[in-house]
Length: 457
Picture 1 (spheres, rainbow, N blue to C red):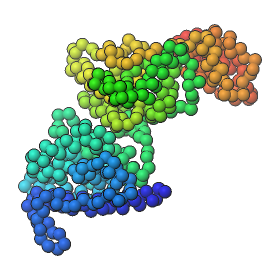
Picture 2 (picture 1 turned 135 degrees about the horizontal axis):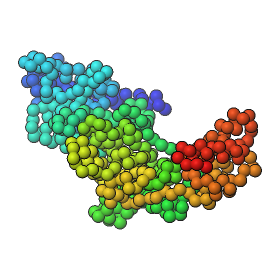
Picture 3 (picture 1 turned 180 degrees about the vertical axis):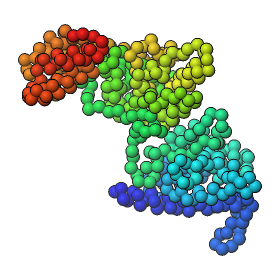
Picture 4 (picture 1 turned 90 degrees about the vertical axis):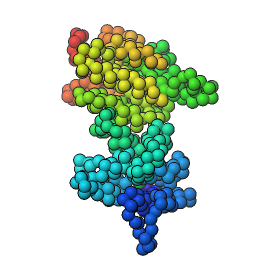
């Protein structure tokens, strides 16, 4: 099946690339007032739109399906191809390396970037504007709409715009195709984005179920509110006519001691609503360089904008902390970062969950905009006993003489800590060449776990 998809996409793209190449040649010829050669006869194109685009109406490829489903205009189709070409036929853009002899440099109007390793021409928005508008200023203004939020290419996350600096012209942004759509129109395979230098987020999943999550009733009711919103937000917003007064999206703060189930809850919400949950790696997001933090976050939000994703910011204090008095330039830039985050989160149409150990560490401006603030407490003795039974219930290698009730009543531990204790007990059991975990193994593990928190057993 994959071979058929590859062949179908390749057949469609071959026709598209021939068309694109003719358009690019025509634009170069028109711009420099040269004559193009067509069928051996000299002719001058009046417009690049004189060159007919391939008819994809009867084409069964995934590429053609995308063009039809989104009703891409000729301009959007050419922009999409421009972003694809460095990945599938980079030599087609080599003509844009032509140097301006008057200044011994490339032509400014061609735009473009030179990659660190890639030897070909990497297009920018300026490249697309040159291709479609040449020196026609009115057409140039028209093309800018293709890079705005209402454009299918941008709103669907098909084409990504990467700005290297905030003070440079908008059209200098690098023009990239998203990995998801690159794969779709080439191999037909869908790879979910995962952690890398350009995407500082990790897809998190769990094998556990709601039955494994032990939380107070009032907490579970708050969680159910989030699940209900995700499942029925379209009904509330559109069918009930509330989209004029209610902003899209849902923002929630999970706070409480470590190991009390914040990350697991986020994962289970994703499982319940069939949504991917991405945990943002704040160490990769926060940068000491001015503007880099905003750029890194924008990359995540831009890719998530049109996806059914839940964004989970763990240990959010590092990024969403309180604003300080602007006594220095560093303070001002830090406050700008927080303001930027506040705006992006408020405008994000999906679910954003922030997790923190201490609620007071989160800036009040964020707190006011949360739809829910959920406290994850340390489990009481009754819930601790349930946790011990659920965690140890997965194994038969446990001494039945262990008084789990006594352990649960005596030692205040979170679910995460209990899991660590069981892990330690299993290791100790194997090291002692025993077949079953005994109470002494658990007590020793508890002692170590409490010591990590500065407590004594």
